[in-house]
Length: 232
Image (cartoon, rainbow, N blue to C red; front, side):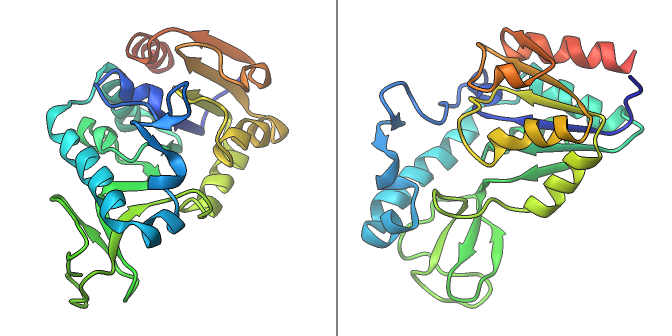
């Protein structure tokens, strides 16, 4: 099959090898917290201090981790692939950018971005946020929240993502559980539109049966090998 356009979806399994906790453990907790206590709009309205503390800790953790071989290989592919390429990540860390990826969408938002609920502006945010943070655009105090897509909210740039998937020749999913929608349904859209599909995961995902090919192992080993083959 002639491959020109590629869409790559990455999940928590890619960043886990850099030392970042995966989205949710087998006990259903997200880094020790119930999901509904830290990543819903209702949680933020109920206890903003807890939500800010949770995301401030995750943002601070980014300073102690580095991109791994999978991030670097995807950045190399981004830089060298002559056709269309879109890297869609469910991760809110900045490791893809730090590795050098440019053609990138954070569908679930970014830890290093803030969103003012008063004026609607989004802006870079590196430090702790907290309840008393002021918006750099309008000056409003107390209305700044992490620019993260919480449960019950619509992921970002879905129109652009879905258009790219409909046009791609190859859809690749790396380090995802296959359990969180709408991302879990991307493979079905790609298959319906005639793309070849490949999964690379530490273990088979819930949607492995939907892929033409499934490779198991660490992303830091599988992804560089795949990129080498593709670019050769």
